Amino acid sequence: MRLLAAQPRGGRNLIFLRAPSSYPHKLFENHGEVRQLPAAPSAASGRALAAALRRFRPELLVTEFFPFGRRECRPELAPALAEARRLGAKIAASVPMPYFSAPEKELPELLADCALYDRLLVHSPAGGDLPCMAAAVALERRVSRAAFLSVFGALRRKLVFTGWLLPPAARAAKKEKFILVTRGGGSTSDRLVEAAIGAAPLVGRPFLIVAGTSTPPAKLARFRRLAAACGGDAAVLFGYTDLPALMAKAAACVSTAGGSVYELLAQRSKMVLAPYCGARGREHADQLARAWLARDLAGAGLLLPADLTPGKVAAAVRRALARPAWRSARVKPAWFCGAARSARELEALCR
View 1 (cartoon, rainbow, N blue to C red):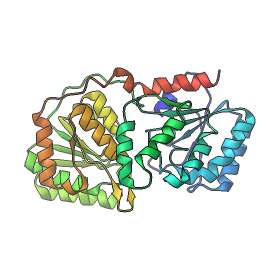
View 2: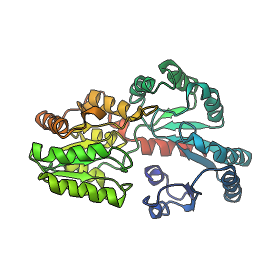
View 3: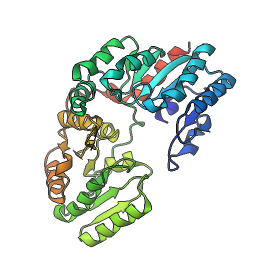
View 4: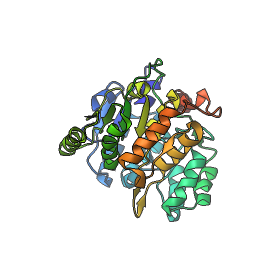
């Protein structure tokens, strides 16, 4: 939505969405005609996509995540990409970070998919996330660091590192006493919520915990019972409409290391990060890489899965509160202007 909001006025869009019911579909309708995709990708869905593109006749087709991620969508997207090419449309990728999900043996297929694209927009600053991603991805044991970096080298003529896609800068907010705890959408990291509830009485400050809109009602009720039983000042919310504004007010933020890390960096927030690392055999390195980046650029505290206990969360929060807010001189204002840079790149493709 940040990319759509940054585009020049007057464009018409056909937007395909596959997302949970909690996703704000109505907000997308402000930017174009929205079509809901079936629950699972399939070749039949791909033919329907191609037919829709034939009727719409776009100048530009933008795919989200693919070809670097969402590889399970390949049978569905292949007909759409082929039809876009036949219609003479340009093709661009909108990729949230310099990271891909293909194992080393599938890199030729990944590069073949990338060959269909005119631009690969990676929403990260040049020299930002990539070194941390390359170091962390080796922990997944599916691709070596050298092979990982070789993909970005092979694609350098098509790659554009745009900077991070952030909302417009908010006015500076006065810091309040509370500690904000968030885990993004809420599909992972139950232990972070539980440990934060237990940490609240140890820190002696109010904890505002946003469980996330993917949290099932029964689990949300269990978190609230736990908060009531722990005796600390911990409130558990389902969601919050303007999370960046809440982050700006918090004395410190405890979070998984999703995209909110970039907003916290932009706001110079004090932060403690507990990256979701996946499960054994299905490790995920992207959040760990973001946590390393925030540690190096802003002194963020780092909690690994074994550290998610009330005592260790409380200790990390106390350390964050005790140190002054700091951000490296390496961080440039342009790093946070990815939406505007991306819009300019897409507009240039259509000239």
